[in-house]
Amino acid sequence: MTDSPTTVRPERRAELAAGLARVRARVADACAAAGRDTGEVTLVAVTKTYPAVDVVALAGLGVTDVGENRDQEAAPKAVEVAGAGVTPRWHFIGRLQRNKARSVVRYADVVQSVDSVRLAAALDTAASEVRDRPLDVLVQVSIDGDPARGGALPGVADPERGLDPVAAAVAGAAGLRLAGLMAVAPLGWEPDRAFARLAEVAARLRADHPGATAVSAGMSGDLESAINHGATHVRVGSALLGMRPTLG
Image (cartoon, rainbow, N blue to C red):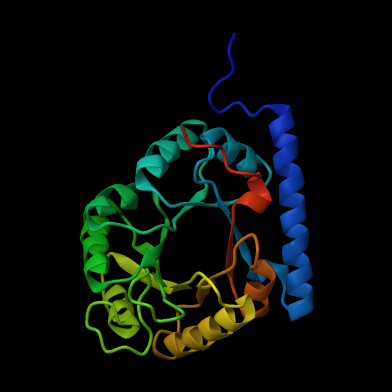
């Protein structure tokens, strides 16, 4: 008799439990240093390239939120995980093409990477047709303002990619709910500099959109700095799951 594709091997479960304990301890220490409650920070386990069985194991260990960044991997994985009776909160965190919107809204509870008015419109159309409740959206913001990389541009009067127009497009969409911001520290920036800048941008967004309180920032290498500057979600992959499998 062979194992089910979602049967968790004891040794792998032990590895994940140890990784989770270490990450939770780091989050708790960072919250204590920042004078924050650990309940204010949600751990999003980034499971790209890892199998569905790891998602099932993490759910059994108490992880409620899972992040993926490629629809062609995430869509079948979400089906497999659901087939095992596990229903995490799925976050889509990668660059998203508009033609993938209809697929993503079928399984994602949150899309963290909206950075243009056209993408917001595509998601709104898809969500309104497919879902029975609005899709939570985080606007991805470019901390350094480099238009060559992903992210809406704060303080830039660009009707397509300016942060204010993108946020307004999400907030005004019937099929979407503006939940907050997401960002990645730019290469070459110290994390404290990057996340302090993000905190300023987030505060200005909340002035116009008081319900947009989520700030997704920080990964395995810099989650302490992100929490110190107000992150409500940290996206952790390798520190939790170990080195990524080699893609064949």
